[in-house]
Image 1: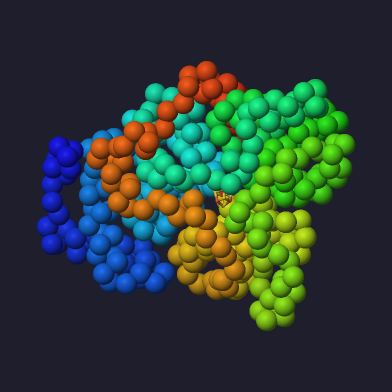
Image 2 (image 1 turned 90 degrees about the vertical axis):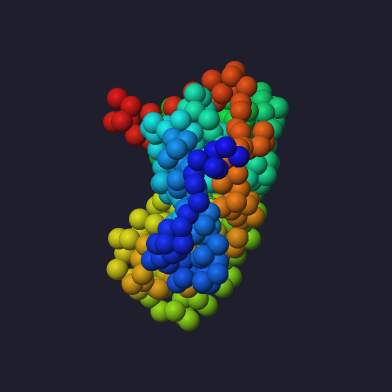
Length: 352
Ligand code: 13P
Ligand code: SF4
């Protein structure tokens, strides 16, 4: 409460200026009404003042709601970029607008910072698909095979593994592992694992062991309408996230993580794009590339959409115990090693 009082109250001019800023950032183009923008402005004004007072930084994943991305985020990006930037930030507090595995990663890399997850219920179906005991069983079953884990896993699961990967570097890192090993275990995303097996020419089971986890957003896209879309929208470029099924991935123009997908849109001359991923990504692409046309083909992630401005304000003012990300020291230390290995393998020049 005391913290809120120190923020003060916005004047009507402050609120009008903040609403104008949100309008200019593109919220109206995304369908936000005047009343919604005015309500958001009151919260973003307070959050932005409070984050300075509390020396906090607000990272936001690209799937977050537009009022979070345009209203309060200090940096926006994919899982890889966010993990890097959180580790480099000098702020005392990190208010993570994303899901739990991302906030845990920030805590692992910056154990001295206070890391807050405004929506503590923001999980991930992939992270929930595997336990540390199941990873230990896989290691017993495949002795000597390195275990690469997608970043979408709990800290306790990461702690059992050899290297973390993200959608931005999975192929590169697995290819390096295969240069030294004949078998690699990849957890927990089965569809991404199958896509990697095709890209790397490795057999599922005997060379690349995969787990049975699925992203509840990306597993539901199917390839059956791709040919129809191409006839309906001649020249359209279709991009799919690497968590989609192999059948879909082989029928699109680009497959990768959200960072790679955004770069592709930026460097490609085509006028129209279909982005097969979570809907927040399309909203962000629309505001970054106003001259391009985006054909809707998306699904909402309930976990990614759990974070709203009231939860962010609450976590900054006076966080509930469940909004504070805390990890046992031994798990944190063990989970840090595979994350650092990822940075070394993904960007050897930076760690050199
Ligand atoms: P990116 O790292 O590609 O942003 O993916 C994160 C995620 O959760 C995708 O569903
Ligand atoms: Fe997890 Fe899928 Fe949601 Fe990403 S989109 S957080 S992988 S459930």
